[in-house]
Length: 245
Image (cartoon, rainbow, N blue to C red):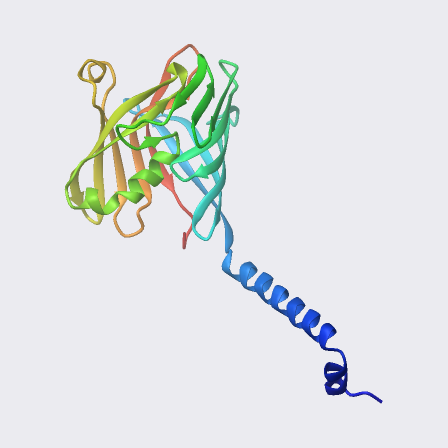
């Protein structure tokens, strides 16, 4: 009877094939271990800035791979349980997600699709834009990851400029984020429009981040969610995260 050693000696071609197969399986195993995928669910409670009445709840479901965002679904639900809207995002890049926003009232759909050359938009107005050459170009929820990328700069007291997509107008909007306070382990930021004329009609937005975790704790100001009757909600949104995330 041939032993395994004898088979290896007599069949060098099969030996090479077996070795190659083992190598491929090993590499697949390494890849599987390295790519850690997890899903995080968290909520944002949006309150009226004047009356503190609950306007709606954001229900986030975020899928990450090795800490990098891949997919995210946000459901906007009224206090009565009715759906205001749903946004489905695919993170082509962390700061430039593609997304579809489906609004119940007023009924409309907004599509934003970035690629290497720029971004195409289907909204109240439609068209395409090239990436800004003046500053970083940021889309929708990618704003959070832009802040995280520049967290040390902001923590040191410096301001950061960027171009933010205004899809309903098919244009880039120059914004500036500035640190205004650090208190009890939190970094308070102010977001304002660079254009002086537009700054008269668009109020500043206040953001509060946890310094240790770099999580967004609250957002106060104009949102991108349309409300029935016209205009967008202005809200104070407080975010709640699961323990350990």
